[in-house]
Amino acid sequence: MESLIFSVLPVSDVIETERLMLKEVNPKVSDFIFTRLKDNEIKACYALDYDDKLKIEKEKWEKGLTTYNISFRNFLLFSKISKEVIGRAGFHTWQIHHHRAEIGYGIDKAEQLNKGYMGEALAAIIPYGFEQMELNRIEAFLSPHNTPSVKLMERFGFVKEGSLREHYFKNGIHEDSDCYSILRREFDAKPALFETIR
Image 1 (spheres, helix red, strand yellow):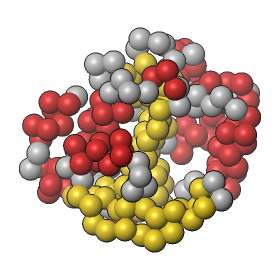
Image 2 (cartoon, rainbow, N blue to C red; image 1 turned 180 degrees about the vertical axis):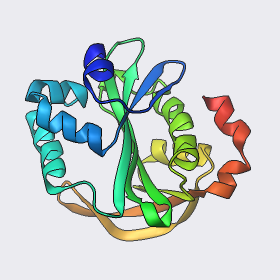
Image 3 (tube, rainbow, N blue to C red; image 1 turned 90 degrees about the vertical axis):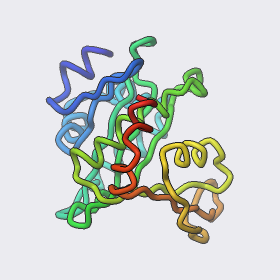
Image 4 (cartoon, helix red, strand yellow; image 1 turned 45 degrees about the vertical axis):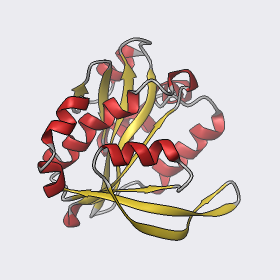
């Protein structure tokens, strides 16, 4: 698996933290994954444990993840300890001309939950968004009931702006989302926070 991520995939940015290697998945890498790799390799690459999840990822790619002004930058979270992809984090709905993107993240391996991996990853990915992607605003849409995500965003200085009613459709239910954001000037004012966590 290590050779698949770092040798087979096209060259892209790699960020290293204490326990993780973060391999960037941009549109070029995504195209390579879905046109050149076999299903079992795609599942391993994205830490997908079910064929239904593979189908969803293929459908998203086939229908187009980018347009002339919308793109994404995601990262595969590769554990130095377990030697496998344990999750993903990064930016989607990247409005290039407006310098904003939505952050998304998740640990796909249940045994790797509650070990601080996502905080470690986001401490590197958020600066990447501001410094490499030249974002002015990073936003997150969270379920009000997702306490771990709320705490994570608050830990990184995100500010709750309000609620969007019935914003997501999940498990047959329209759910509200709370909107959080951090601006470049707020990030610039807190460099020590990100250095401490990384």
